[in-house]
Length: 141
Image (cartoon, rainbow, N blue to C red):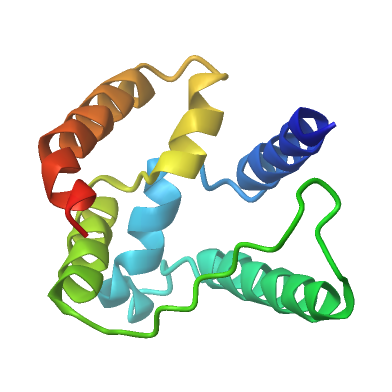
């Protein structure tokens, strides 16, 4: 049953990314091009996607606080570590820089793979290579 929930959640997530246009790298790049605000070509629609994700997450957390356990597991696995260290700062910063430069992040790229986008294959290969290169660092944490 757990696999069914994962399949449904992943399908909804991928469909949402596709409908919002997030699988198109130009969408991200047009949002991050703040210089285009003056010309009227800035695309703020990614902000709507962010806000929608935050609202859905907030609702999900509120619902989870009312539940004794999740539908597909024995207990909730909510992180409790509140420590802000260099890994927490620099990891997302590096991710964000890469995302801004090429306009892709893993979720939208996996959705784009199903549409046959050739740049998606290169992105996934380099993404997995980056994970493998940093794997020893991640195991010590």
